Image: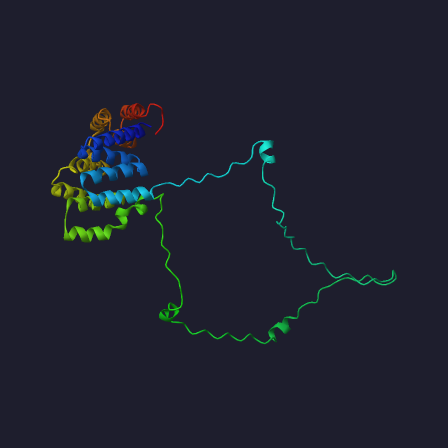
Length: 303
C-alpha cells in the first residue's frame, strides 16, 4: 500500500534525523510513522527521539507502550502431510488408560415359566398422586448468619485480579490513558509543554478531539525549545481535517484540495477528501474524477 510505503519512508528519515541530531524533524517524521503504523518498533524509535530531545517522561511512556505492543506469536504445530511424518509421530505412553463409557442398566429378566403359563410382562409400579401430598414437607434450612466483610477478610488470602491491557485495543493498552488523572494533577501544579503533550496524546488516543486540540495548543504556547512545534502543528492540521471543515466547500474546491494533498504526498488525507466526494450528491463527472484520484493513490487496487 502507498500509505505503508510513506510510513516506512518517514520512519527511516526520522531515524536518520536522530543521528544528525535534528530532533524537531525526527519527532515530526517518527510521529507520522507511528500514526501510520503504531507498532512496537516505531514506538521505540519515537521514545529514543524524545529521550535525545530531553523529554524523559514522554520517552519512558513510549518505551512502556513499546513493551506492551510487542506481539507474542504462537505457532501451532502443523498436521502431518506425508506418510513418513505420520510414522515419526510419537507413540502413546504405555501408562495411558482408556476410561470405559457407562453402560445402560439392564431391565430385570422375567422368571422362567412353562409354556402353558401366561407370559410375564414387566410393568413399573404407578405412583399414587395422593401419596405425594401426604409426604412430610422438608424443613427449611437455617439461614447462616451473614458474616461481615471485615471478619471474612481477616483469614482470607484473596487478591483482586489485575486486568492486563488489551494489546488489540491501543486505547486501553496506552500508558497515557491510564495516567490521565495523574497527568491532570501534575499539569495543574506545573503546566509544562511536556505534560500538555502527554495530555493531548491521551485524549487523541481516546478520540476526544476537542480536548486533544486544546492541549496541543497548550504545547505551542509553552514549548520554549520549539522542538515540538512542527509535530504538533501537523497534528492540529490533521485534526482540523478530521473534524471536516470542508463541509461548506463545493465539489470543485474539494477536487482541487484532493489534488493538492495528492501532490504533497498526503495520501490518507487525499483519500478522505475523494471518498467524501463520492458520498456527496454530486454530478457524475465529479464522482468519476474522485475515482480517478483514488486510482492514482492506489494503482494496484489495494486500499
